[in-house]
Amino acid sequence: MQVFMMDRYYNPIKDIVGVENSKVAPKGLANIKPLVGPNKHQTQAWIDALQRRGYSGNVARLPAVAGIKNTVLLQPWCEAADKMVHPHVWSTIAREAVDNGQHVRIAAPASYSAIANIIKKDVPEVENYCGKDKGRWAQTVSEAETVISVDSGAAHLADALGKRGLTMFRSTNPNKWAPFWNRNVIVNPTPKAAAAATRKLLNG
Image 1 (cartoon, one colour):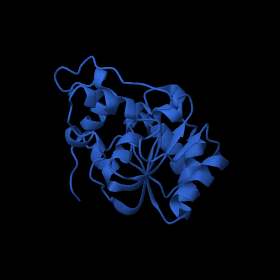
Image 2 (cartoon, one colour; image 1 turned 180 degrees about the horizontal axis):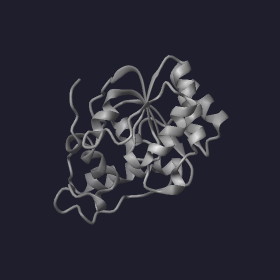
Image 3 (cartoon, one colour; image 1 turned 120 degrees about the horizontal axis):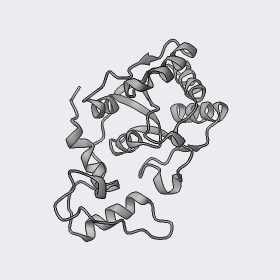
Image 4 (cartoon, rainbow, N blue to C red; image 1 turned 180 degrees about the vertical axis):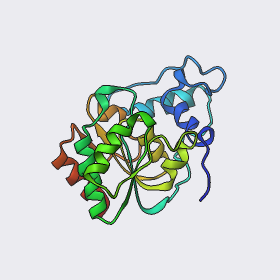
């Protein structure tokens, strides 16, 4: 398995979706603002702004990475509490994935171990990987065939790597913040709706 380093695969996405906060933004672009417009996706607004300023970096999809067959990564971590999804929604997703013959891994900072333990109690087959991928987060995403995430960097990185994915939204607008290429989303997911979306994703 090829190793995918954070600075090579995640920073280009930061350049696209958050240049004003990116420590690796090309010189002269620190104060750039997205060129927003009616019905324009937020990522496209950043791409347009970058290209207008002459930036010719990696604004296209990164080389697709197949990942390990039948491996699903669940990524519940996010910085904003109002984006979080109830653990039992995750348990329902995990059960659906396991019943579909998938190896399921939960990856998040160690502080999310309590949530992972709830999911693992409900679905013992799940691998709790919380706190174990420090410094290799991008590789953890690349190793999965499918990534199911809240609205977070993991969803966008998985999208940029050509992963099959599902992104769950609560407080943010998917029309603005959904991954750019893969628009499989679910809003305010209930366990039943999440299970149906997961089933459709894995069998589609």
